[in-house]
Image (tube, rainbow, N blue to C red; front, side, top):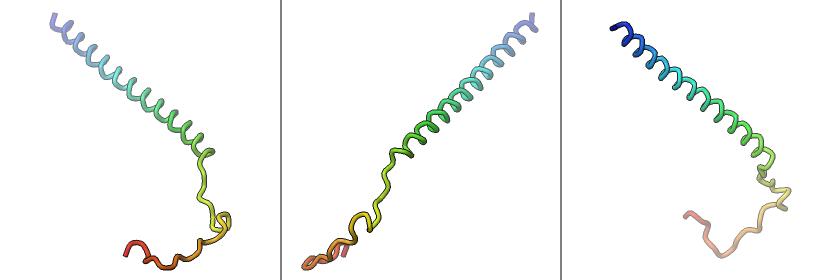
Amino acid sequence: MDWLIFLTVILLVGLAVGGYLFWSMNRHANRHRKHHKHHKRRRHQRQHNPTLAENGGLPDKREGQPPRGL
């Protein structure tokens, strides 16, 4: 009778550990897949900062106003 209780406890612990491992591996795979798709999509939609040549150069120097941050 004692061995039946022992086997039941071992079986329940094994099922709990196996279920946790299955859940964590499945969760990790789904997160990696979603991140990979999102990263590819964002890379094509991302806008770059324009260069000074694309903007037309630096703006004119301000006169009569003190520089910011002082």
